[in-house]
Amino acid sequence: MSAVLYGVGVGPGDPELMTLKACRLIRENDVIALPGKEPRETVAYKIAVQAVPELADKELVPVYFPMVMDKKEQQRQHEAGARLLESYLDKGKNVVFLTLGDSTIYCTFSYIQEIAEADGYQTALVNGIPSFCAAAARLNTSLTLWNQPLHVMPATQSLGDKLDLPGNYVLMKSASHMAEVKQMIRNSGKNAMAVENCSMETEKVYRSVEEIPDDAGYFSLIIVKPE
Image (tube, rainbow, N blue to C red):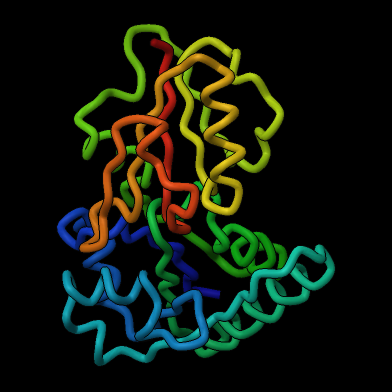
């Protein structure tokens, strides 16, 4: 099988942060998959079309993943998405699946990729700028210095932890438990800054844990450092 299924990161929101390779692959291929019911309404599309206007004329394939917690239902959705994209690969057409941020970090495409590879299809990943790197740049701060460790984790998985490992933290997926996450940070005695909707028009920057609202949006990312 010569057709390739690409997972392409489009970065955090600013179209100027898309890579040249991501733009080239969109231009060179006719089938573009996007995670959502309505492709033109997805965040990934709205970012990419600003950098590559030709995207509007491509064949856009919606791959919908409703937010469910049941593992069997998640697997069913992933398999359905993979089979849909495989139907294009079977016709010899490359498929470019656009995803926010980087294609290797908490990325739904990874599940599609695993299924497609098991079915014998060729896949490839194209990196994008990760949201936490963009947020650090927006905050004008480093993520690590010298030999400091960096811990990247979903905040919802860290509830109850003391954040007592050495080094700095990136807390992702914080929005649904923001009040608890903020209390965890206070208990740690560390400093925190956050960016909501980094590099998008609705971006908001918070310079302390007290500034972060409990109802911060889904695309909120927190950087935690020792005092």
